[in-house]
Length: 344
Image (cartoon, one colour):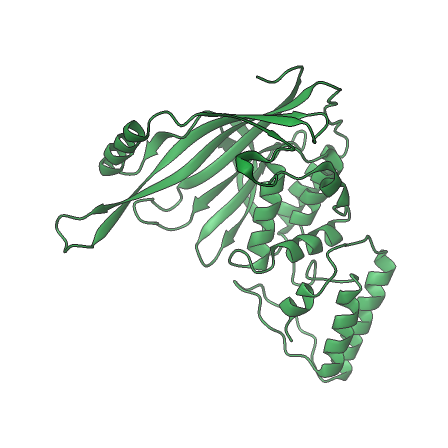
């Protein structure tokens, strides 16, 4: 039985546990590991979570603690760099003082976002044999406005501009992207759906009840995120940061949970300050991110250090990927929220 299997058996309902209880459990675990002949050593962060060999007695103790939601992965294998943790914790302190916009009866929370998406298209290479394709890539821009009613069970409205090719990594990519855009035509959409359940599916946006159920304790919150994302992505830490970025960019996260998410990100190994002056859609902030070793793609969240507000999130490739050069941004999203009296 490995650590991931143990965590999969945890109850997803993560309560807040007193620090004293966590400390006692950790002390018991480390004591048992020592007496069982397993030396305590400082673990190195690795690209993937390694299985730790334990005695049956130690596994039994870990099972008891984990199954009781007392401990988890958070904080056991290191954390963000000191510089990144300082930025995130300062942002959390500023965010907790923020008063969220009040959406009254009949009003809507309007979430405007600008998004950059990566597109790819395979073309036959005339110099090669049949079946040999070359992939060309470019970036599309899409602007969206989401209207969220005060009562989330009511009808939501979503205006999407459609994807427009804007950045090209080669002349061939530009030619093909413009051809594709002309053939497809206008892809803008005006959508309406009760509870935000667009495209005839259950809502992919978190409900007020779901948001209220997240722990505001950073360690417990991160452990809960590890549980929700087990088996996804390339590593538990990388997927946890992606999950946090995805939550933040919805624009629906209340201030106390945003603050807890910042603090949770400060507990993820490998998270560092990637850029002190990052510009995203004309806004400047500090970029906090982590490189996923397998794909060599970096996930960033960008924060305004003056007020703790999220500017947006982005992904960059650390090495050439097809026609995309190393260091290129392959996706980003920025959000702005306001309260309006009506939806289109």
